[in-house]
Image 1: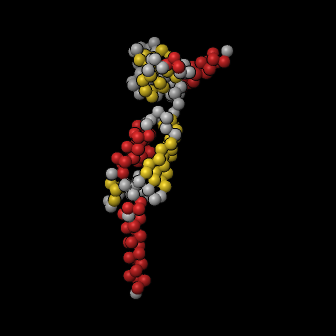
Image 2: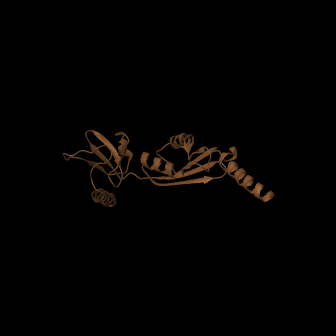
Image 3: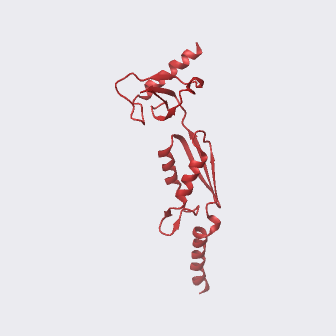
Length: 172
C-alpha cells in the first residue's frame, strides 16, 4: 500500500522539481562566434523569450521548458547567420554559438553602397569612407532593375564569376 501511495507522490515531486524549481531557471546566456551582431542583441532576444509561456504549465524561464527551436528560427530570420547552435547547459545556462555569413562583394546603386553575400542578399549599407580599406570587389548596378532592399536580384553564378575574376586580377 505504501508503494501505491508513494510512487505517484515521487513522480509528482520529480515533475514539480524539474519544471518549477528555481534551480533550473535561466541564469546565464553565453554567446560566441558573433562579430557584426552585438551579443547584447542576441541576449535580449533570449531574455524576452524566457518570459513567454511554454505549454500550459510554465514559462520558458525554466531551462527545461525553453524552446530552442523557436529561438533558432528567430535568430535565423533576424540575422544572416551561416550556422546557429543552441545548447542548454544544466542547471541554468544557454550556450549560443553562431557563424556569420561572410561578405562577398560591395554593391553600388542609387548613390548607396551595400555589403552582399554570395547569394545576393543585402547585409547592410556600407560606409563609403571605409570601402577603400576593404578587399571586396565593387560592383555598380547599371541595370534598370533595382534591388528590393533584401536581395540585389543577381544570381549566385554571376556573383561567383565576379569574385573569381576579382581574385584573378589580385593575383596578377
